[in-house]
Amino acid sequence: RQGPGTYHLCFSIPQSQKASTLSRLKALRFVPAGKIAPAPACENQEVGFFYSNKIGLIELLFISDT
Image (cartoon, rainbow, N blue to C red; front, side, top):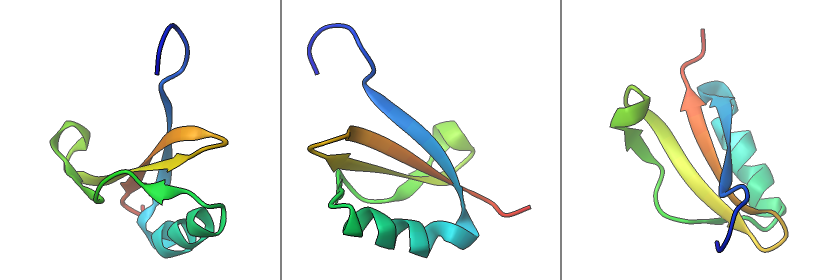
């Protein structure tokens, strides 16, 4: 990304919706930008980045169901 503007958006997703969310992203032609992995900066909750030519980069934070 060049110049000012939004770099990416982050969405929190309950773990119970992880599979359906990933399926939906695939249907919308988002591609993974790396592996989903625990993020120390987010209390070791899983984080994944996905890219779409139409939208750009998004981050998903998979949070524990409460």
